[in-house]
Image 1: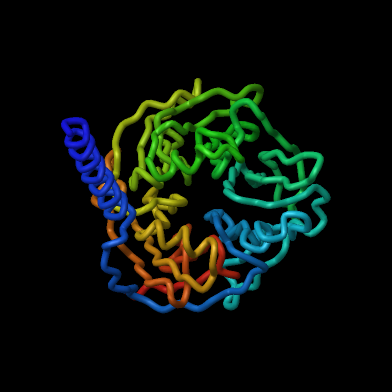
Image 2: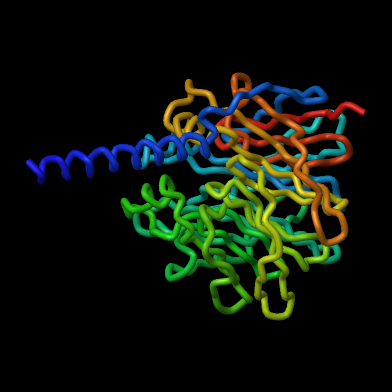
Length: 360
């Protein structure tokens, strides 16, 4: 009898603990969050082949480079995936038309994060590529040079020991870059699910110095987007399950990162873009479980946010919500990039981008 009483007490405590854990998970994932859509401006769609998960703007030329891949189709057709594309979009044109830059790239191509590096007249494009070839299911960083409206492939770089779950890349030199590993556990490892739902802070950022890879920052919950300040002295990492942007000081000589500040968003931060005034623009998922459902089923819509975080010297102002959508017209926004009172908005799955004009 005493044993049964103790067992009941234990089960009751366990049930209370699990109930509290589930409520906390749902709250942190934005399940109870009310979505009141707003945007001070107008927007129109620009069609691309597939979801524009990431994009970046070269402010010197006014060209946007857009990374697209049909992730939903490819996950459902692993034996016959469609190749992704990088598009260029001339933002100075009255009616910009996307131009396919990678039609002649011979290797299997499934682009994810993208970064630009300009040195004088030379413009380099760095892309995370999740190759799906049967003989080589490895992720690479592809380095291209943009020449005469095409991307000329220069190099493929990979490292299975440290760069095994890359999400985004930021270039800091002609062959130097940082990459976010969005999970600590490798693809195919069932513990990745626990890593997500328990919000474990095991994942890390790696740095490639032109010769070797090394860990640059650890202890991050789902490191996603990554970028650097215009000076190159600060580096930013979006922690999706941490619902924040982490600011690091960057030693340009060694690549070493030192954490400076957390910018809390209370939303699942995705990609980070830096505008010509050094401000941050962050695409985000306010209801992360809705985004997980949307990834499985296009009919289940996912709300979206874009934040602007103004830089004040070496510090940052409170994030300002610029765009909030309930996802009915455009779901799963992952990136927003600002250019001359316009905002380019990309999504993981929606076929195209939004060209948004901000009201004065």
